[in-house]
Length: 256
Image 1 (tube, one colour):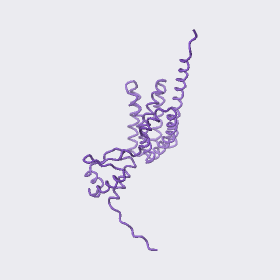
Image 2 (cartoon, rainbow, N blue to C red):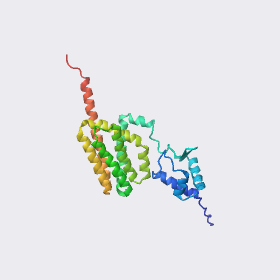
Image 3 (cartoon, rainbow, N blue to C red):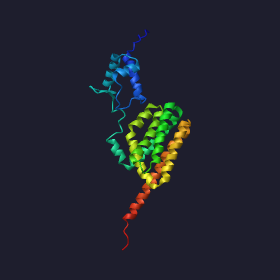
Image 4 (cartoon, rainbow, N blue to C red):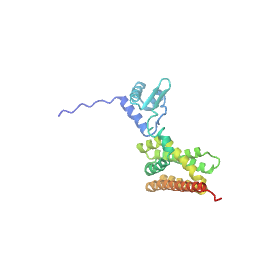
């Protein structure tokens, strides 16, 4: 049988592969503007016409968006399956909130496990910065908004996902980030009024998780991520039970 002749790859195909890899690994994020054509061509070590050809093909496939006079951007629709209006539906449904925490068990447990196995030195530096922001939030209690505190918490979990070096896990977390952030803010609102002990417990859980990842204790990292979410679920359930008991008590009429 006569073998088929090998087809020579075009340089633009190699450039496409490089850009796709950068998008998959999260170096180029949805909605982000790519470097200027001249700078990107120099970074890749290719000619501008070859780069332009690759970008045109990626634009045709919907991965990139070219704006006349405004540059080239990664498509904002990438990983958008859990954004508005689904975001609002999930956020306002108590059952969905419980489902989200259950889903976070699977997702964040795996992220922590792989982060402990695969985190590089730059990943550890980003994790350190993210954890220090969580610590700073705790120190500034009473002087920090719930939204800022929730964002710092969510960014810590995102840093763990980035350190996992699993493209599917990372892009799932990123597509859910707004929902995750709002879920954390909602949880904070439900838990912190119960007392300072809960805030200290949560910080201790974040610290234990951070150390397990840095020390490459993968099984411990997965367990600690899940135990953290178990604790959140338990405290929220207790809070909701207390609220229901208070509502029932308030509905009872005082005997004349």
